[in-house]
Amino acid sequence: MSPRLAILAAGPSVTLQDAGRHGYLRYGITSAGPMDALAFDTANRAAGNPPGATAIEVSAGGIAVAAEGGPLGLVLASTGFRIALDGQALPAAVALTLEPGRTLAVRAGSAGAWCYLAVCGRIAVAPVLGSTATHTRSGLGGLDGRALAAGDSLAIDAARAGAGDPQALVAPWLDRPADTIRVVLGPQDDAFAADQIAAFLDGPWTVAGRGDRMACFLDGPRLTHARGHDIVSDGIAMGAIQVPGEGLPIVLMADRQSTGGYPKIATVIGPDLGRLAQAQAGTRLRFAAVSIADAVAARRAEAACLAPEIRVEPVVRTAFPSELLLGLNLVDGVVDARG
Image (cartoon, rainbow, N blue to C red; front, side, top):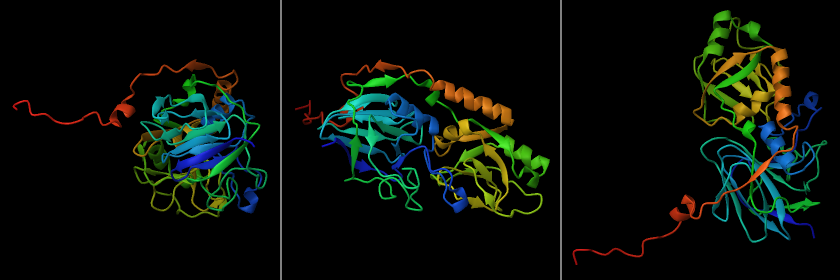
Protein backbone atom coordinates (compact mmCIF):
# COMPACT_ATOMS: atom_id res chain seq x y z
CA MET A 1 0.00 0.00 0.00
CA SER A 2 1.30 3.46 -0.87
CA PRO A 3 2.00 5.84 2.00
CA ARG A 4 -0.61 8.52 2.60
CA LEU A 5 -0.58 12.02 3.99
CA ALA A 6 -3.35 12.41 6.56
CA ILE A 7 -4.86 15.87 7.07
CA LEU A 8 -5.40 16.26 10.81
CA ALA A 9 -6.53 19.90 10.67
CA ALA A 10 -6.81 22.54 7.96
CA GLY A 11 -7.85 26.17 7.99
CA PRO A 12 -9.83 27.82 5.20
CA SER A 13 -8.36 28.04 1.69
CA VAL A 14 -5.86 25.18 2.12
CA THR A 15 -5.89 23.61 -1.35
CA LEU A 16 -4.03 21.40 -3.79
CA GLN A 17 -2.38 23.41 -6.56
CA ASP A 18 -0.19 22.64 -9.53
CA ALA A 19 1.18 25.18 -12.04
CA GLY A 20 -2.35 26.04 -13.18
CA ARG A 21 -5.04 25.20 -15.72
CA HIS A 22 -4.06 27.04 -18.88
CA GLY A 23 -5.72 27.42 -22.28
CA TYR A 24 -9.35 27.68 -21.17
CA LEU A 25 -9.81 31.40 -20.51
CA ARG A 26 -12.00 31.77 -23.61
CA TYR A 27 -14.39 29.31 -21.98
CA GLY A 28 -14.55 31.32 -18.77
CA ILE A 29 -12.14 29.05 -16.86
CA THR A 30 -9.18 30.81 -15.26
CA SER A 31 -5.92 29.12 -14.35
CA ALA A 32 -6.01 28.89 -10.53
CA GLY A 33 -2.54 27.63 -9.53
CA PRO A 34 -0.28 29.01 -6.80
CA MET A 35 -0.60 32.49 -5.39
CA ASP A 36 3.19 32.63 -5.02
CA ALA A 37 4.78 30.73 -7.89
CA LEU A 38 8.34 31.26 -6.63
CA ALA A 39 7.68 29.70 -3.22
CA PHE A 40 5.68 26.90 -4.90
CA ASP A 41 8.55 26.19 -7.32
CA THR A 42 11.09 26.33 -4.48
CA ALA A 43 9.22 23.65 -2.52
CA ASN A 44 8.90 21.34 -5.52
CA ARG A 45 12.50 21.76 -6.61
CA ALA A 46 13.84 21.10 -3.12
CA ALA A 47 11.63 17.98 -2.98
CA GLY A 48 13.07 16.68 -6.25
CA ASN A 49 9.71 16.88 -8.00
CA PRO A 50 9.16 17.88 -11.64
CA PRO A 51 8.28 21.55 -12.27
CA GLY A 52 4.62 22.29 -11.62
CA ALA A 53 3.99 19.15 -9.54
CA THR A 54 0.95 19.17 -7.28
CA ALA A 55 1.63 20.62 -3.82
CA ILE A 56 -0.42 21.86 -0.88
CA GLU A 57 -0.94 25.61 -0.66
CA VAL A 58 -1.38 26.48 3.01
CA SER A 59 -3.21 29.67 3.93
CA ALA A 60 -2.81 31.64 7.15
CA GLY A 61 -5.37 29.23 8.64
CA GLY A 62 -2.64 26.58 8.83
CA ILE A 63 -2.55 22.81 8.55
CA ALA A 64 -1.50 19.76 10.57
CA VAL A 65 -0.50 16.51 8.83
CA ALA A 66 0.76 13.01 9.62
CA ALA A 67 2.26 10.20 7.55
CA GLU A 68 0.42 6.88 7.30
CA GLY A 69 1.79 3.59 5.98
CA GLY A 70 5.41 4.72 5.83
CA PRO A 71 7.71 7.74 6.06
CA LEU A 72 7.22 10.68 3.73
CA GLY A 73 9.72 13.28 2.61
CA LEU A 74 8.26 16.78 2.86
CA VAL A 75 9.47 20.26 1.98
CA LEU A 76 7.90 23.49 3.22
CA ALA A 77 8.66 26.87 1.67
CA SER A 78 7.50 30.05 3.38
CA THR A 79 8.64 33.22 5.05
CA GLY A 80 7.57 33.76 8.62
CA PHE A 81 5.19 30.80 9.01
CA ARG A 82 5.57 28.79 12.22
CA ILE A 83 6.49 25.19 11.49
CA ALA A 84 6.66 22.58 14.27
CA LEU A 85 7.34 18.84 14.39
CA ASP A 86 5.73 17.35 17.51
CA GLY A 87 5.90 20.83 19.05
CA GLN A 88 9.57 21.37 18.15
CA ALA A 89 9.98 24.61 16.21
CA LEU A 90 11.54 24.37 12.74
CA PRO A 91 12.61 26.97 10.16
CA ALA A 92 9.97 28.51 7.90
CA ALA A 93 11.66 26.85 4.90
CA VAL A 94 12.64 23.28 5.71
CA ALA A 95 12.99 19.74 4.33
CA LEU A 96 12.38 16.71 6.54
CA THR A 97 11.18 13.14 6.72
CA LEU A 98 7.83 12.75 8.47
CA GLU A 99 7.69 9.40 10.22
CA PRO A 100 4.36 7.72 11.09
CA GLY A 101 3.18 8.70 14.54
CA ARG A 102 4.59 12.22 14.36
CA THR A 103 2.68 15.44 13.64
CA LEU A 104 3.81 18.34 11.48
CA ALA A 105 1.96 21.59 12.15
CA VAL A 106 2.02 24.78 10.07
CA ARG A 107 0.62 28.05 11.39
CA ALA A 108 0.69 31.68 10.34
CA GLY A 109 3.49 33.73 11.80
CA SER A 110 5.19 37.08 11.64
CA ALA A 111 5.27 37.34 7.85
CA GLY A 112 3.75 35.80 4.75
CA ALA A 113 0.25 34.72 3.78
CA TRP A 114 0.93 31.45 1.92
CA CYS A 115 3.15 28.43 2.64
CA TYR A 116 3.80 25.56 0.22
CA LEU A 117 4.07 21.92 1.30
CA ALA A 118 5.56 19.61 -1.34
CA VAL A 119 5.67 15.83 -0.90
CA CYS A 120 8.65 13.83 -2.18
CA GLY A 121 6.55 11.83 -4.61
CA ARG A 122 3.29 12.44 -6.46
CA ILE A 123 0.05 13.43 -4.78
CA ALA A 124 -2.35 11.04 -6.47
CA VAL A 125 -5.34 13.11 -7.55
CA ALA A 126 -6.91 13.05 -11.00
CA PRO A 127 -6.42 16.09 -13.24
CA VAL A 128 -9.40 18.07 -14.50
CA LEU A 129 -8.89 19.74 -17.88
CA GLY A 130 -5.23 18.81 -17.67
CA SER A 131 -4.57 20.23 -14.21
CA THR A 132 -4.98 19.36 -10.54
CA ALA A 133 -5.20 23.03 -9.50
CA THR A 134 -8.14 23.67 -7.18
CA HIS A 135 -10.60 26.41 -8.11
CA THR A 136 -13.14 26.23 -5.30
CA ARG A 137 -15.62 28.73 -6.77
CA SER A 138 -16.20 26.46 -9.77
CA GLY A 139 -15.50 23.18 -7.95
CA LEU A 140 -12.70 22.18 -10.33
CA GLY A 141 -9.54 20.20 -9.60
CA GLY A 142 -7.80 19.22 -6.40
CA LEU A 143 -9.71 16.92 -4.08
CA ASP A 144 -13.32 16.97 -5.29
CA GLY A 145 -12.92 20.63 -6.26
CA ARG A 146 -12.78 21.81 -2.65
CA ALA A 147 -10.39 22.94 0.04
CA LEU A 148 -8.71 20.29 2.17
CA ALA A 149 -10.28 19.47 5.53
CA ALA A 150 -9.59 17.41 8.63
CA GLY A 151 -10.10 13.73 7.89
CA ASP A 152 -8.85 13.87 4.29
CA SER A 153 -6.15 11.40 3.30
CA LEU A 154 -3.95 11.88 0.23
CA ALA A 155 -2.38 8.86 -1.50
CA ILE A 156 1.25 9.42 -2.48
CA ASP A 157 2.65 7.59 -5.50
CA ALA A 158 6.39 6.90 -5.85
CA ALA A 159 6.93 8.22 -2.32
CA ARG A 160 10.48 8.96 -1.19
CA ALA A 161 11.70 9.27 2.39
CA GLY A 162 13.38 12.62 1.76
CA ALA A 163 15.86 14.54 3.88
CA GLY A 164 15.78 12.54 7.14
CA ASP A 165 16.43 14.93 10.01
CA PRO A 166 15.12 18.45 9.35
CA GLN A 167 17.30 20.53 7.04
CA ALA A 168 16.82 24.29 6.59
CA LEU A 169 16.50 25.47 2.99
CA VAL A 170 18.98 28.16 2.00
CA ALA A 171 16.50 30.20 -0.06
CA PRO A 172 17.00 33.93 0.63
CA TRP A 173 14.89 34.80 -2.42
CA LEU A 174 11.77 33.87 -0.42
CA ASP A 175 12.23 36.99 1.73
CA ARG A 176 10.63 39.65 -0.47
CA PRO A 177 9.23 42.73 1.29
CA ALA A 178 6.18 44.12 -0.48
CA ASP A 179 7.07 47.78 0.02
CA THR A 180 7.39 48.36 -3.75
CA ILE A 181 5.41 46.41 -6.35
CA ARG A 182 6.45 46.81 -9.98
CA VAL A 183 3.78 47.24 -12.65
CA VAL A 184 3.46 47.79 -16.38
CA LEU A 185 0.92 50.55 -17.01
CA GLY A 186 -2.21 49.60 -18.93
CA PRO A 187 -3.98 48.22 -20.80
CA GLN A 188 -6.50 50.99 -19.96
CA ASP A 189 -4.25 53.59 -18.32
CA ASP A 190 -5.63 56.05 -20.88
CA ALA A 191 -8.86 55.99 -18.86
CA PHE A 192 -7.07 58.08 -16.21
CA ALA A 193 -5.62 61.57 -16.34
CA ALA A 194 -1.91 62.08 -15.70
CA ASP A 195 -2.47 63.31 -12.14
CA GLN A 196 -4.42 60.13 -11.34
CA ILE A 197 -1.64 57.94 -12.74
CA ALA A 198 0.74 59.86 -10.49
CA ALA A 199 -1.58 59.37 -7.50
CA PHE A 200 -1.74 55.64 -8.25
CA LEU A 201 2.05 55.39 -8.27
CA ASP A 202 2.56 57.64 -5.23
CA GLY A 203 0.00 55.89 -3.00
CA PRO A 204 0.69 54.78 -0.41
CA TRP A 205 -1.68 51.83 -0.42
CA THR A 206 -2.59 49.48 2.42
CA VAL A 207 -3.45 45.81 1.87
CA ALA A 208 -7.01 45.31 3.15
CA GLY A 209 -8.03 42.30 5.21
CA ARG A 210 -10.85 41.24 2.90
CA GLY A 211 -8.65 39.72 0.17
CA ASP A 212 -8.52 36.07 -0.85
CA ARG A 213 -7.27 33.91 -3.74
CA MET A 214 -9.47 35.90 -6.11
CA ALA A 215 -8.27 39.42 -5.39
CA CYS A 216 -6.13 41.72 -3.27
CA PHE A 217 -8.04 44.83 -2.17
CA LEU A 218 -6.22 48.08 -1.48
CA ASP A 219 -7.13 51.02 0.72
CA GLY A 220 -5.73 54.49 0.06
CA PRO A 221 -6.40 57.58 -2.06
CA ARG A 222 -9.47 57.26 -4.26
CA LEU A 223 -8.76 57.51 -7.97
CA THR A 224 -11.10 59.19 -10.43
CA HIS A 225 -11.72 58.13 -14.01
CA ALA A 226 -11.36 60.48 -16.95
CA ARG A 227 -14.46 59.20 -18.75
CA GLY A 228 -16.46 56.83 -16.60
CA HIS A 229 -15.64 53.57 -14.90
CA ASP A 230 -17.28 51.09 -17.31
CA ILE A 231 -15.62 49.52 -20.35
CA VAL A 232 -16.52 46.66 -22.65
CA SER A 233 -15.56 43.54 -20.69
CA ASP A 234 -12.32 41.95 -21.74
CA GLY A 235 -9.93 39.25 -20.52
CA ILE A 236 -8.28 39.44 -17.10
CA ALA A 237 -4.65 38.42 -16.56
CA MET A 238 -3.36 37.57 -13.09
CA GLY A 239 -2.06 40.81 -11.62
CA ALA A 240 -4.44 43.10 -13.53
CA ILE A 241 -5.37 46.12 -11.40
CA GLN A 242 -8.97 47.18 -11.89
CA VAL A 243 -10.29 50.50 -10.63
CA PRO A 244 -14.07 50.30 -10.06
CA GLY A 245 -16.35 53.27 -9.56
CA GLU A 246 -15.42 53.75 -5.89
CA GLY A 247 -11.83 54.48 -6.98
CA LEU A 248 -9.96 51.91 -4.85
CA PRO A 249 -7.76 49.50 -6.88
CA ILE A 250 -8.36 45.74 -6.88
CA VAL A 251 -5.53 43.42 -7.94
CA LEU A 252 -6.91 40.25 -9.54
CA MET A 253 -5.10 37.10 -8.43
CA ALA A 254 -5.04 33.32 -9.09
CA ASP A 255 -8.80 32.64 -8.77
CA ARG A 256 -9.84 35.80 -10.62
CA GLN A 257 -12.82 35.99 -12.96
CA SER A 258 -12.12 35.49 -16.65
CA THR A 259 -13.37 38.91 -17.83
CA GLY A 260 -14.03 42.29 -16.26
CA GLY A 261 -15.64 45.60 -17.18
CA TYR A 262 -13.64 48.10 -15.12
CA PRO A 263 -10.60 49.95 -16.50
CA LYS A 264 -7.28 48.30 -15.67
CA ILE A 265 -4.79 51.01 -14.78
CA ALA A 266 -1.79 48.67 -14.64
CA THR A 267 -0.69 45.03 -14.35
CA VAL A 268 1.65 43.65 -11.68
CA ILE A 269 4.68 42.01 -13.29
CA GLY A 270 5.01 38.24 -12.84
CA PRO A 271 7.97 38.26 -10.41
CA ASP A 272 6.11 40.61 -8.04
CA LEU A 273 2.82 38.68 -7.93
CA GLY A 274 4.14 36.41 -5.18
CA ARG A 275 5.58 39.40 -3.35
CA LEU A 276 2.11 40.99 -3.28
CA ALA A 277 0.32 37.72 -2.49
CA GLN A 278 2.51 37.24 0.59
CA ALA A 279 1.74 40.71 1.98
CA GLN A 280 -0.29 40.45 5.17
CA ALA A 281 -3.26 42.71 5.86
CA GLY A 282 -2.08 46.15 6.92
CA THR A 283 1.04 46.10 4.75
CA ARG A 284 1.78 49.51 3.20
CA LEU A 285 3.11 49.60 -0.35
CA ARG A 286 3.66 51.70 -3.44
CA PHE A 287 3.67 50.85 -7.13
CA ALA A 288 6.56 51.54 -9.51
CA ALA A 289 6.03 51.65 -13.27
CA VAL A 290 8.57 49.65 -15.31
CA SER A 291 8.95 48.74 -18.96
CA ILE A 292 8.18 45.36 -20.48
CA ALA A 293 11.94 44.88 -20.96
CA ASP A 294 12.44 45.48 -17.23
CA ALA A 295 9.70 42.95 -16.45
CA VAL A 296 11.36 40.32 -18.68
CA ALA A 297 14.73 40.93 -17.03
CA ALA A 298 13.13 40.54 -13.58
CA ARG A 299 11.56 37.26 -14.66
CA ARG A 300 14.93 35.95 -15.84
CA ALA A 301 16.56 36.97 -12.56
CA GLU A 302 13.84 35.14 -10.62
CA ALA A 303 14.32 31.98 -12.70
CA ALA A 304 18.06 32.11 -12.01
CA CYS A 305 17.38 31.67 -8.29
CA LEU A 306 16.16 28.14 -8.93
CA ALA A 307 18.76 27.16 -11.55
CA PRO A 308 21.33 25.68 -9.11
CA GLU A 309 20.47 22.96 -6.63
CA ILE A 310 18.87 24.39 -3.50
CA ARG A 311 21.28 24.10 -0.59
CA VAL A 312 20.25 22.87 2.84
CA GLU A 313 21.80 23.25 6.29
CA PRO A 314 21.32 21.19 9.45
CA VAL A 315 18.72 22.58 11.82
CA VAL A 316 20.16 23.62 15.17
CA ARG A 317 17.57 22.68 17.73
CA THR A 318 17.11 24.44 21.05
CA ALA A 319 16.64 22.19 24.06
CA PHE A 320 13.46 23.93 25.24
CA PRO A 321 11.66 25.95 22.59
CA SER A 322 9.36 28.68 23.87
CA GLU A 323 6.23 27.06 22.43
CA LEU A 324 6.97 23.87 24.38
CA LEU A 325 7.58 25.74 27.64
CA LEU A 326 4.41 27.80 27.27
CA GLY A 327 2.46 24.59 26.75
CA LEU A 328 3.63 23.06 30.00
CA ASN A 329 2.14 23.58 33.45
CA LEU A 330 5.34 24.34 35.35
CA VAL A 331 3.63 25.49 38.56
CA ASP A 332 2.77 22.68 40.99
CA GLY A 333 1.41 24.91 43.73
CA VAL A 334 1.81 28.16 45.63
CA VAL A 335 3.43 28.45 49.06
CA ASP A 336 3.03 31.48 51.32
CA ALA A 337 6.55 32.26 52.58
CA ARG A 338 5.07 34.03 55.61
CA GLY A 339 3.82 30.68 56.95
